[in-house]
Amino acid sequence: MGKTGTTKWVKIKNKKGRYRLVPQKRANYKRPGPNQRRDGKGKLRRRLKRSPQSLVR
Image (cartoon, rainbow, N blue to C red; front, side):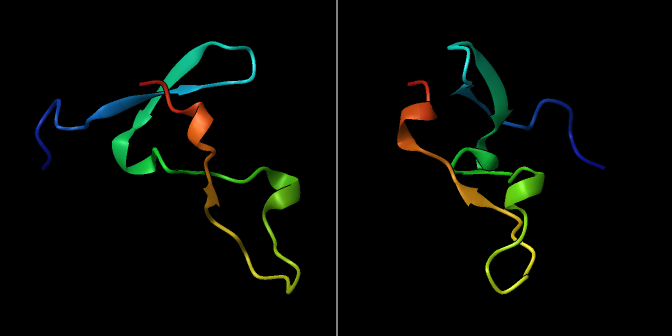
């Protein structure tokens, strides 16, 4: 079992200018929406590159 409190969190800005917390290992990637889930070949896309401006430092 995992220990409590081992997840490191980072702040990500959303469209409204507020921020939300995501796990640090997901800081550089985001999940695609339903319309961006498949690429041109029909392969399932699981991660999209997150823009550098969205990270709150």
